[in-house]
Length: 261
Image (tube, rainbow, N blue to C red; front, side, top):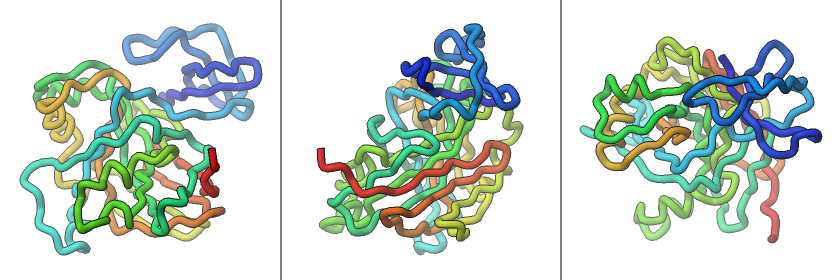
């Protein structure tokens, strides 16, 4: 089942829906507790796809692919590593990534993302797995020069939290049997940049969620990023970046110059 958040000319307020063929069937409220059709049916081609969740927080796992750490010459961590990315970064499929004037080294990162459907606090991996609503594609856009400014990782939130720096979508796929065996790739202007598999992850998704839940209470709709598989590339104005994950789909966004106000 593919769940979207979207809007259109007749319904400018965002609404949830299920994709059925070439249509979106509207839902009554968020789908995390129950799926209740609203009676609205619109063509998928007539809607704007928005970020498919409204998280209270974005917990971004990092250093979670063996091949990526090998490239960087870094050791395998003993515990999941993460940072928080501000919710204002969220945009949906087809929306525009703004290239802030504060960076000269904007980069993309293809990532599998998880959307939760229930609260979690100090959860076991089994409880964490049961709380997963579905999966989506994410692009952890990063101002890399800011990230390493002053030779300090204290600038990580600054580098990761500009408006539009977390494209997510195009939808939430709820029917993923095994998230540890998915092909994941990125394509920049039609050229493959990253290609890997989630089988290269160090920490499985349920272990990551469990670990994070022992630090902070996770809520329905919260978004968990799981790290990027290989060294990523740079983004420039007018670039088209696509993130594709097996069983989910392709998230596509264009880069534009940052607005001045």
